[in-house]
Length: 364
Picture 1 (spheres, rainbow, N blue to C red):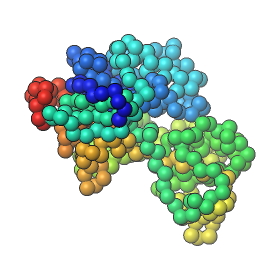
Picture 2 (cartoon, rainbow, N blue to C red):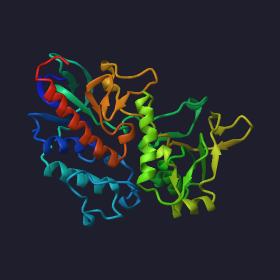
Picture 3 (cartoon, rainbow, N blue to C red):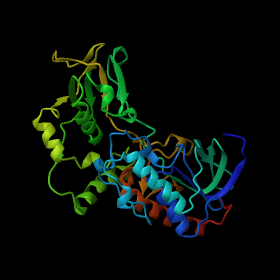
Picture 4 (cartoon, rainbow, N blue to C red):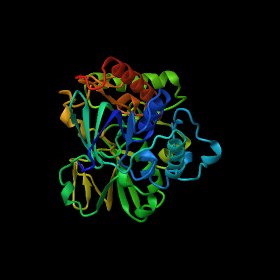
C-alpha cells in the first residue's frame, strides 16, 4: 500500500467495467456522491473494462449480447460494425463515465481487502487505503486467464499463448496451430486463423454443443439459474455461455462444412514438436493457443476468508454469505452484460439497507 493515507467513504467499488459502472450509476442515482460517499477504483489505464484489451479483429459487428449500460444507450451512429469493439465500447464507457460524473480513479491496483477499524473494510491500493462500510467487487475475470497443465508442456519448442493475448490471425500466417477450447473465443479464433495458417487442429475436453433456433428470455433465465445454483452452493462459477452452447450461425455452419471446426478429443500430453494422444496419434505444431477461459479475479478478497470448501464464494443475490458488507457484481450469474446491470442495481439496493441499519462507525 502506498503512502497516500487512508480515506473514508461509504462504498468502495473495485473495477470499472460494465459491472462497476452500473454500480456507480445506481449509487449516484440514489444520492451517493463520488469521492465523498463512494469511490470507483480501476486498474486499467483507460475506460473500457476488459473490452479495451480485445483483439483488433473482434469488430463491433461480431460482438454478441452487448447490452447498454443503465441510463445511456450506445448510439447506433457511433457503433460502426466494422470498427474494433475495443474502440467502440471504450468510447462509450468514456462518455458514460463523463456523463454521470463517476470520477473513476485509474490506474489503481487493489492488493487486498481486509477487516479495518470500527467495522469498516480496509481496501489496500497503490494510491493508499480506502475504508468503506461496504465493498462492491466488480473485477470480472480478464486478469485471471486459465492455463491448463499437461505433461510435457514445458518441453514444447513452439509458442504457447492464451486467448487473453491474442491479437488477431496475422501472427499465425503459415504456421501449424493447435487451438484448445470449445467456447465462443476458441471458435472465433480458429475460424480466423484457419484462413492464414498452414494447418489448424481443434481440441476440446468435451464434445461441443451447438444451439439452434432462437435464444429467448426463457432460455436465458434457465441458463442463468444453472450458474446461480453453483454459486449458491459455494462452487466456482461457470460462465453463462458455458451452459448455453454455441449459437449455430452461418459462419459456424460453413466452418463445420469446410472441416475447420472438426473437433478432436483432448490430447494427453505435449511433446517438443506438438501434441500427442495415448493411442499413438501425434500432431506437429508451431503454436498452441489456449482458449480455455478465465477465472474470477478475487484473490484480493482472500484476507476476508469468503471462500467455501467447494472453492467458490457463496453468494445470495450479490451478497457474499460470509460477509454481507461485500457484494460481488459480474460474478457467476451476473457475468453477462445485462446480468451486470441488474446486479449493480441489486447490490446498491442492499447496501442502502445495510447502511441504514448500521450507523457509520458501528461494528458489523
